Structure formats: C-alpha cells, structure tokens
Length: 158
Ligand code: HEM
Image (cartoon, rainbow, N blue to C red; front, side, top):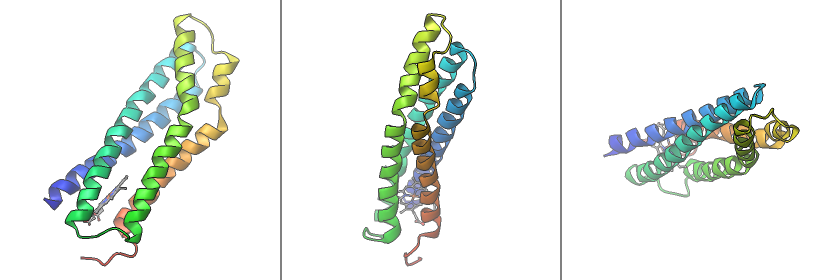
C-alpha cells in the first residue's frame, strides 16, 4: 500500500515539476520572439504546463496525505505542516503570478489572428517583473518542499 501511494505521490511530484518547467521555458521563449504568431504559439504551450501542474498538485497532495496516514507521521510534525503551507504558497503565488501571462496569451492570440505586430501592451505584459518574480519564487518553494520530503527535519526516522 505504501509503495503504491509513494508511486503516485512521486508521479504527481514529477508532473508538477515538469509542468512548472514547461510553462517557464515556453514563457521565457515567448518573451524573446519577434512575431505575434510565435509568441501566441509558445504561450499556448504554457497552458499544457499549467494543466500538468494542476494534475500533479492534486496527485502529490492526495497521495501525500495518504502517505502521512500510512506512515503514521501525523500532523503537527514540522515538515508535514511546512510542506502543506509551502504547497499552498506555491499554488497562490503561481495563480497570482499567472494573471499577466494569461492576459498576454489572450492578447497575443488576438493580435496573431489579426496579423498584427506585437503591441507595446503585449511587451509590457510579457516583461512584467512582478509576475516573473512571483513565478520564480513559486518554483523555488517547490525545491524547498522536495528538500523537506527527503530530509524530514524533526521526524523520528523509521
Ligand atoms: C503538501 C503535501 C505533501 C504531503 C502531505 C507529503 C507527504 C509525504 C510523505 C508522508 C512521504 C513519505 C515519506 C516516507 O514514507 O518515507 C513523502 C515522500 C516524498 N514526497 Fe511528499 N508530500 C507532499 C508534497 C510533495 C511535493 C509537492 C513534492 C515534490 C514536488 C513531494 C516529494 C516527495 C518525495 C521526493 C518523497 C520521497 C522521499 C522519501 O520517501 O524519503 N511531496 N511525502
């Protein structure tokens, strides 16, 4: 049972990480493109990344909570509560940080359909420093969660 739960937990964790990397790489590539068609195409790929993030988060969370139960780790254990709080922060920062890129994606699709060049508004949305910072912090927190999972600070090892 524990192995099965761990398998799906890790599958979720990998999907989550893969999705963040896919969305991040597609977005950074889009920012560097000269034409609206390229920008729209690459920003479209970020949607697949976000889908992987959503599925991965649900799997990692669901099977993670089951692992806590199966492993008799209990809550109120530092690393489990910290991981839950951090995962919530990952989702919130990602959701807030994703608003401008989402606007950019819709605008790029409209401009591309009309055969127009990237507008100043599109460039501003793509270059938004706050949105990028929020997403990079979100990705960084994921690395902290992985460290918590492996080192389990404060847990009695069994
Ligand atoms: C926030 C909800 C989460 C909870 C409650 C949770 C809980 C757990 C538990 C109980 C284990 C099993 C530890 C063991 O039996 O040895 C585990 C293992 C693991 N988790 Fe999570 N987890 C969560 C989220 C995540 C996320 C988001 C990631 C990665 C992005 C992740 C990565 C891992 C890894 C790599 C292991 C294997 C480490 C090991 O077994 O020593 N977890 N998790």
